[in-house]
Image (cartoon, rainbow, N blue to C red; front, side):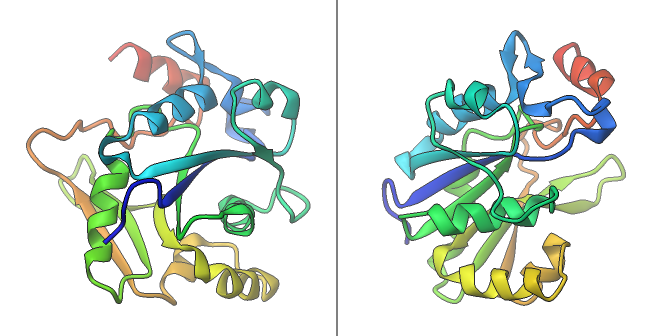
Length: 207
């Protein structure tokens, strides 16, 4: 059972933004608010009071991110090593029992994300809870960047990355990972739509 403020959330904004023309994705506006700040605000409004601390993982424009009111930590790995580098940064800095990872480019993620992922830890063997969402073909698909994990997994992640691992599911498959479906009747079908391009971002603003 996870209690109030036992989760630290990290906003993953450390990518190159290559499919957005190299711009800093987390600083692009969604309804007039930078994506990363929008994500921070949405995390602050998570139901259940489970999310206590917040931090941002970014590798450039650090002062702009610092203005969003949360600590900003660059990757400890060089050369934009991908989301797992952000996971590692979060686990290294996390002072609570659990870490929640959320990307900066999925602005409609659920307000009950933390609460529903936390339910998977009612089984004491759970090490990682990963969101899964319905695709257009009606199939549930894992959303690997939306994970809630035990902070004690840092050593395992460091070893995986040092061995050359870069894929999230390559690491989570080594652990007791529970997929948590977000397919209830009231769930937003666009909750896990990420915006890799400016066109996708604008489309999400104007459905």
